[in-house]
Length: 301
Image (cartoon, rainbow, N blue to C red; front, side, top):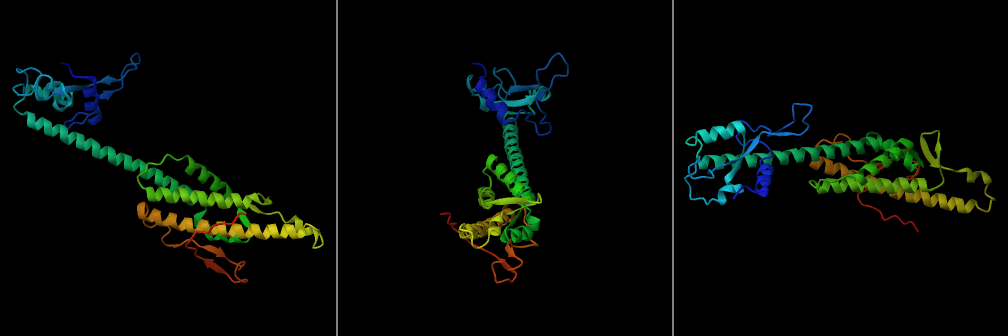
C-alpha cells in the first residue's frame, strides 16, 4: 500500500506546509527561480516515522504495513531534516518524532488562530474608525444640535451613506457578535434617520446643509394649503426627533461595545453621546442635553 492522496493532504494541511522541526519550520513550497518554469517547487517530503520496511529507520515495530503508510505514521519535513532523522535513528526514535509532529501541529493551530484573530481585529477597528469619521462623532453635539433645529450636515449625510453601505456589504467573522450587532444596529438607525429626514421637502443649502424647503410659508396664512403644509412640517419634525433619539441610543450601545471588546478608552473623556438642543427648540428656549436610554417606536402612519 502507498501513501494515499488523502493522507498527504491531511499531513500538509495540519503542518501548514512547513517543516515540523521546531528549529526549522521552513516553508516547503518555493517559487521557481527561473523564468521558464512558472510552477512552484516542492522542497518538503512526506516522511515515515516508522519505516515502510522492517530494515529501514525505526522499522522494527509491530505497526502493520498498511498503517505505516497512513497519516498517524507520517511527518512533514524538509529534505535536510529527512536525511538527519533517517541517518541517525538512535537520536530520533519513534516517541521523539511523534512529539515533534504533535508540537508542530499545535504550533500551527495556535498561530493560525492568532492570525485570524488579528485579521478580525483589523476589520473591527476599520469599521469603528469609519463610524467615528463618517458619522462625525468627534463633533456629535454640533450634528445633533443642527438636526434638532432642522438642519443636517451634508458631510454627515454622505458619510452615513458610505458607512451604511460598508456595514451592509461586510463579511462578518462572527468572533465578537455583540460588537457586530452594535455596529449593524448603528448603521440601521442612522440610515432610518437620514432617509426620513431627506424624504421630506428638503433642499441642499449652500452645498453644505440639508434643510426643509419652507417656501410654502410665503403664500401667507390665507392660502388654502397652508394648514396642510404646516401639519406635514410639524409631523416631519416630530418623527425626525424620535429617529434622532434612536440614533443616540444606538451610538451609546455602540460605544459601550467598542470599549468592552476593542478599545477601552473609546470616547471615554467625552462620555455619553447626547441629543443636544443649544437654543431650547424643544425646551422653552433653554439649552438642554437629552440622554435617551430606550428606543422609540416611530409612528409613520
